[in-house]
Image 1 (cartoon, one colour):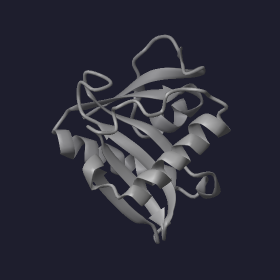
Image 2 (tube, helix red, strand yellow):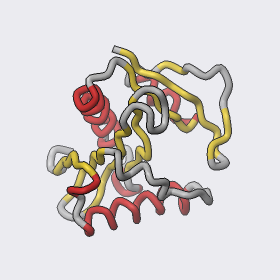
Image 3 (cartoon, rainbow, N blue to C red):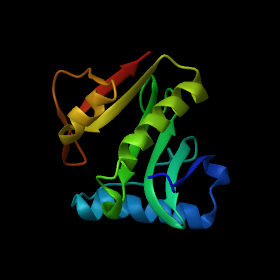
Length: 151
């Protein structure tokens, strides 16, 4: 989707409207759509960077990029989502490609670790991530697998 506007921001530079849209879509995807009750506001947003794609004023895709030591020993990418009307457009793949590049650049790191929902394992593998946990595990009631991308 070539008409998207991409933004990469620290928490402090998010406007209140941007933050509201991000939290609204995170709630729609992770709580309502996935029928999952969990604490989304986890104090990690403050130290994270926020990558988002916008179609005018509508949030299309989003993820947060976490510094090493916040969720894992390595830098991480989390809260990865594409808003329902924009799925199957390639925006999720572009989001992750941009997030990977931004993470390596931002933290000058050699690896990224993620906690991936199991049903997205093949998607993350297609981006170069390799499973690092032998077993799946429940996170907020959804099966996950730990994966790592190393350069």
